[in-house]
Image (cartoon, helix red, strand yellow):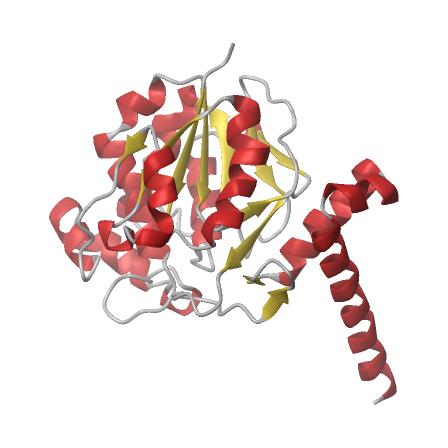
Length: 294
């Protein structure tokens, strides 16, 4: 039986309903172990659930300014590369730049430098954000595939969920080496976003040919008034006490679920999510009609 490790990085937003969806659809069906990797400033009463459930607690003292991490571990070239994408969130975490690109890149590096041997003890690895709400289980995977949901690519490839064989772990988590050398080797993408950098890195490591895009089954959420470094959630997920950050993610995930199971099973899986789906679909249609006739 294959051994799976789920690694959660980034701000642990979303609360118990969100994390329960992770266990229901991903961790429990795969009998996976859980590792958490984020700053210990996030260790609060609300997210002790993750700490208690984690097989590996890789939390750490987060720097006030992530530029110090890069200064301690890389040359100025890496920082300059990150700053070149400041308009697209790539420099987030350095000085006053918005977004979280520098942070999510450094988190991969922390795993690469400190925990890679543990990661490689598993057969398969899932690296994802802690604020993902899951509505379905994973498809089967073979040893040479790298699974990434479709959509949310932003000039590159979506970086919110990835599943791969652990033989690819060193190549995947070595992203900061790419940041260090991208300019010198003329590998920098035209638009420096977290997604375009990941795509360029996968190509540079000869991993892109292994990527298989799968139907989306997850979307990004927050609790009301939770802090975010980038896009503020504006859409209510009614009766769940959650907010949807990217409505197209939600709509795609739910439409894929409806197509897979049919109308009645779709309703029975989670009628609250289904009602929110049809509400947002109706809202989108009415918005288009309003523009058409205004």
